[in-house]
Length: 111
Image 1 (cartoon, rainbow, N blue to C red):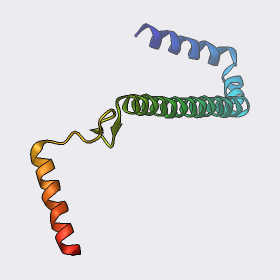
Image 2: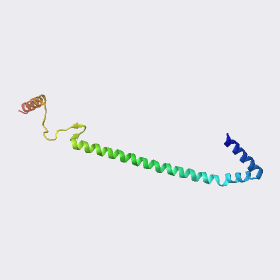
Image 3: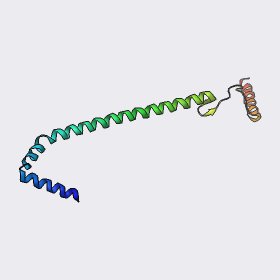
Image 4: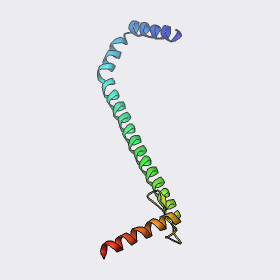
């Protein structure tokens, strides 16, 4: 409310002194280039910030992917499953029996 009164008083004094025409001339000649420069600067800052944040996002994604790949390689994980590293043929008795019966069937078919 005080700002409205102050603004109204300033405009009234400018009209009485004859500065109203100066304001109109200022608005016509100086304000448009200032507004264009301000907008250009704002757009430039926005574009730079956007590119920087995109770069940070890509770097963070690549880094986390590299960490996961290193962990999986260290643990012997391939395609999300644990692959035996020391003794690769650690099958259960049921799997060995199935594999033996499959091998026997193939051997009979070849004869």
